[in-house]
Length: 438
Image (tube, rainbow, N blue to C red; front, side, top):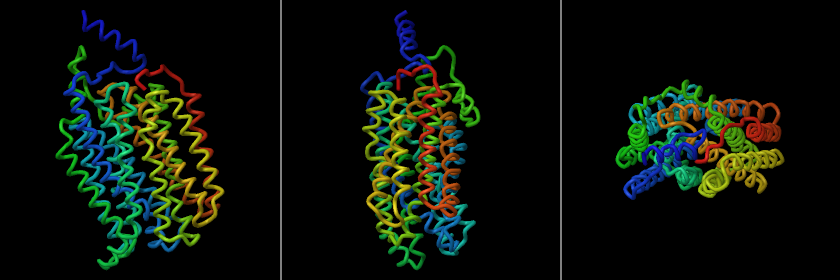
């Protein structure tokens, strides 16, 4: 009777969500601390690899092509790769857990970094595109790590725990772009093009991140959460890793749907402006060190304040923080539209705000998704969210290259501002049962 009363009470508190599986003992909390510590370390290492490649991806593409018109495709294919790789990653996680799934993503990232280095040496654009797709596997692993942090999180701290893992990327992601100059010197010393140097740093970071996860992410958070859910359920839970099913589940759940739309549009706005900013600066005479500095400022905005965002989500709710993220993204895009070619303080501020707005949309949207679906559906729905996020950003990145090539960077900023405003529209249109956990 006592168990039945507790279960009914939990159901009332979580209308529209799943019954709470919160951590109840000191041992459980110790497991979650170990999980967070491991994910923090892997995010730092993976962040070095991803941000190093992003900082020079479009420049390497322009060097190979001899024209900026299609240079944005390098970054676009990285984003598309992260989206497509989310599909098999969700399957792997559903069957075997977070650890093998995240390791799979970093392994593909290592292969991609090798191909990108080779593409720069032999000046092959098709090889660059192929390498960019596989390089996106590391981005997919970094993205999915935030959900691994939420698997065992207490309901009242879901936003905080998720945001801590997002924040952990700060150190590696800020360090990566600032190593571009050093990596270039290393590459020249090895007799290969300077712009391939950062990808040597990338494959090192990915390899170390994969090794850390293999050794320390035990017990597997998703498998442990599933075991608890099965023990609490009347009938055994059948887990699902299909992204197609995940999309259907999200579409039928207003809370999850709003989360999916938020992370997809927020990521599209961020990527479309960010991938073209190095070219915008390069054409104005800025050197690699200055470009790396601006990108590091942008990455600082993306990750450094995510714990504050997570606290705000837990304290005030996810929907209000989605609106804040939309407003910050609109402001950043309008500032970027007014920035002159090359270096300017206004452009640095715009890129910082672009990262901060992305942080609000990612943390709040991901928290909505994490709290809205049962454990059995997590891998599929979360994979679907990252697929939608990657496809939206890939399309935005491709359009960004065309817009900048034909109409200029200021027009890109205006288009990004419109897309960011649509996030606020989604909050007003997509309504559903409130999830107390978020």
